[in-house]
Image (cartoon, rainbow, N blue to C red; front, side, top):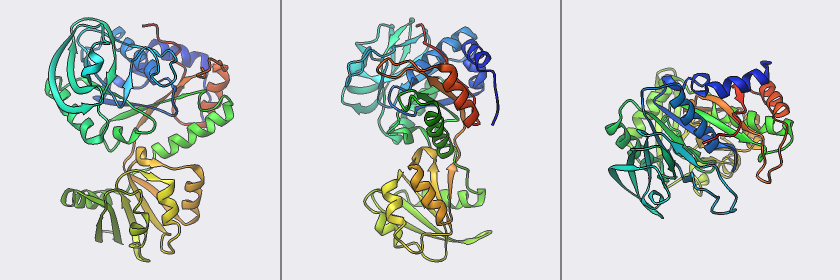
Length: 365
């Protein structure tokens, strides 16, 4: 793996995360946390500040899967970093969050998307100030918000502040690139944190399936909107595809697995692929010597043991859309305020992964 001067990298990151991650060339970005308190909001604040400092002419548009920017965690009561935006920024947030924003906001559009704290509305900031983001909770709703944003600012950089448990809402080709936030919350042991980060990156950046197979899958998904599994037989340009429709993957593992035959070369699954689903498949004799295809790496909720079992059965893991993880942002502070040496964590991470790792430091907003 690469060796790097971590002090220089930290300083460089603080100077320009926009240039380090190539954000000025993107139109969409997702920030995903490896754990709770991973530092996603701090990373977002650094991007906002550097976007303004580097005099980018395109506006930012922000939303969240869940809730971000509140002054304290609604579950733990711990203080959280707030989100500070400049005038001209677009935000998609629930009506109930507007009263906790001190930026002057102009409502541009209504989404008809409901949350526990009201409808998600699209606003433009008319002044600098703090905002709270409480966005949509499903993939289809996120697509609708993205469409609304593009209607008002076609050239903006649209940033989705993701969530660990619902990271699939930022995948499936919805975003051009991703930043992964990791922290001492996952582990205070540098080696263990590096191992877990490397595994997460390997899964998130699973390789893309061949173009001809991808085209066959998309053609079937366009025709069968409720398809949950595709069983593909054949090689080269001659394929036979069987379609199965179920409400989800979870709870229907047996029904899907029993349709796998000795001649199945590719199995595509739509939705979250979990350890529970894989455990059901592994009971079937014919589940071997094939390629298992997910929509993208955000759909794979698998532990290392499940990956090892797939490998033992000669199951290749591929995706329709490979994620482009541009950066790993490190937060060296545990939620209990235990501070771990940033240099030690950075050194171990940088030796273990092929993605640039930075400690952005606190965001002074």
